[in-house]
Image: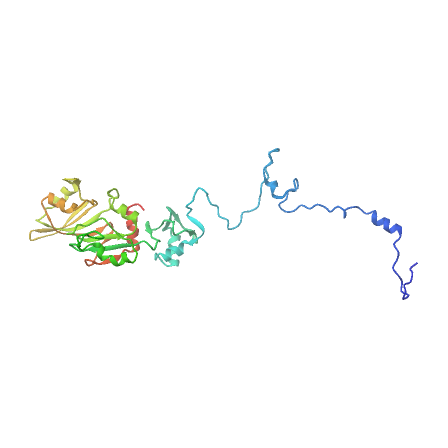
Length: 329
């Protein structure tokens, strides 16, 4: 029977021994918490990630079937110069900054398969590359990204030396580019023209390109307009294609065209890939038609055009790309 409290309200019931016994008779589950299996933990070992290692004793190998991260990129450690770089610059942006085309135009070029990266044609949009290391070509012509590279065409005047300085005080190529050199540009001329020859002389700070353009093994053609004494017969073209012998070895032209014959003189267009000193003059002396005036008009596909003697111009992207292509770069 319930007992009354001080205010007359029923007091709390006293627990009987029977009720206490009933509570103590319950299973001891609460005293020993149930072990749970967490994600990534093995039921066999309970040691977390270490369970994914091979079990040497039993020969069992536990496989991790987790999917790779959505943006994970597989990188071949042996390929230190990977074409695609996760934190690089998008290809269409690189092409736009190089002046190849607008971004939309660059995307169209990529989709059309006109863009090549490190020898591989790419058609996927949004690829990221390292513009400092990637070799980019559009329609086979290399795109130059390095803004520090300089490529200039000079119309060397007649009577000027093909040197950057002259200890005798004679006018030289270095006088024409003196301001650029003083501003920090390290330029050098690609090959030479003798003092009496006018025409196209390339200047650059790209040492590898300059070396290859000058090396005879790459056979980069040079074209000249030569005014010679005498009326040249058509048979001379075959003679010079077959080659003539000079003191320092044989020389042959790639092509000779008779442009005009007038008043005992002939105007010839001569193309050859030789670069030896005064080669055109010595060759024409050998066949009996000495040179009166000589102008170089082309180096590879780069043309002198309407440049005035002593003037400089910056080569266009297509011109530089064509020079690279001509020497295998």
